[in-house]
Length: 199
Image 1 (cartoon, rainbow, N blue to C red):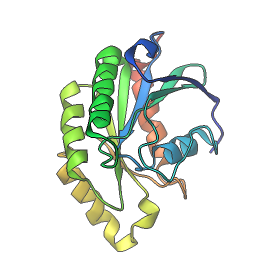
Image 2: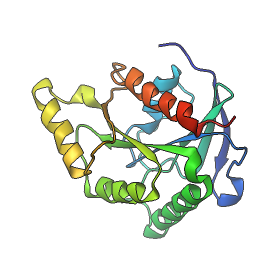
Image 3: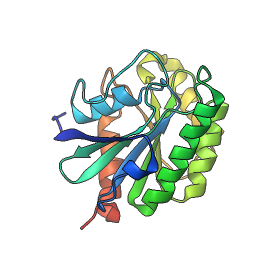
């Protein structure tokens, strides 16, 4: 997998720092410590573009990465980390709501679910909210290298059932092995080709 041209552009802790240049955006969202940074680095063929931390809840702002000078990857704050103050979790939720209101139909959402754990109640709540937005969405089951081969089909079927996925894709992904990279890029490219990318 070739390296993609990518650079960090901005961290937006509040609405006034949101970017608004008309480019399409691919937003990555999931529970804290679900593996967003590892996934982003693997997708882009980089090692340290997105910072990886063993401590959940480190992404506390919306982070923009410009890809191939054409569109943005947007790393959204992880939801539901229990060890931060409730007020801080609420501020994260408000920021995310403001983001989706701001970007509207220029975004495709990649919801990450821990493949080893399966969909949690927080994932289900986030899924219902994302479905209500009406934007395109792809669900990715991360850390699938940690799931035994004889449990994979059942785990993926469980995630699909818990999130009530119908036509939306569900991709098995591993940042360690590269599984799912081509499939996820295919979904992103399809979004861009169908009008997500600015002319």
